[in-house]
Image (cartoon, rainbow, N blue to C red; front, top):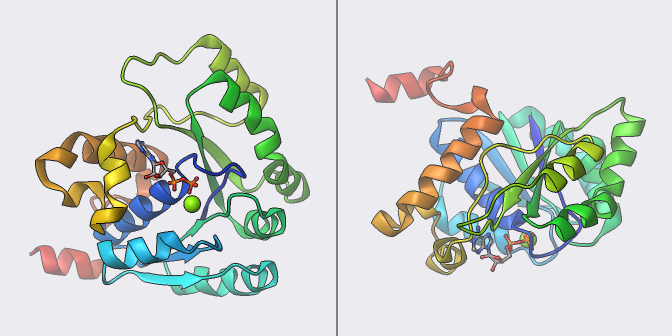
Length: 224
Ligand SMILES: Nc1ncnc2c1ncn2[C@@H]1O[C@H](COP(=O)(O)OP(=O)(O)O)[C@@H](O)[C@H]1O
Ligand SMILES: [Mg+2]
């Protein structure tokens, strides 16, 4: 399964989501490749430190992406592709190959409105491919006292993209994690609440990926 983390706006939490998702899938015993498709290449550096056993590749060229993503997809249970901030052709190539697009979006009406533009390429791909990739919005950097307003639900409905029920809260620990070369559940008690919400999110958006859901044989082996 090829999962693309997509939103053509920068600073919305794509790399944070991509690295945590790749680390989570790896820990569930799945074979996973993180495809770092941003020219800044920060997520592959971070992921290598946080999860030394994780396979990472850097793919920033649209032709490379179109050619190699299917092969990477055959070699692993999951490919998690961290998308670029602004390079439209790179995004297009990813979305023409992806099975699922997770679209992190900051929790504000302005940001949700901006999504119409920031997901234009996604909708083109869905139009061409008969609805694929399936897409889901993940609210990120949500304030503690935030409430999802009807306006925001309507905006998501207008985009025809379901909102994940679990949101990622604005927490310092997420911002600290890359500097520590870690994901939040490796950061002890300070990371506990973040760890709980981020794992809950992944269980929600990828219910089949959890180790308990038809664990691959070798994981069952080690667990014994
Ligand atoms: N839930 C969060 N709470 C606090 N800071 C966050 C959160 N998610 C991301 N950040 C920080 O916000 C910045 C942008 O996030 P990043 O994942 O790099 O976004 P993108 O890849 O979309 O540019 C980074 O400094 C990151 O550490
Ligand atoms: Mg990024």
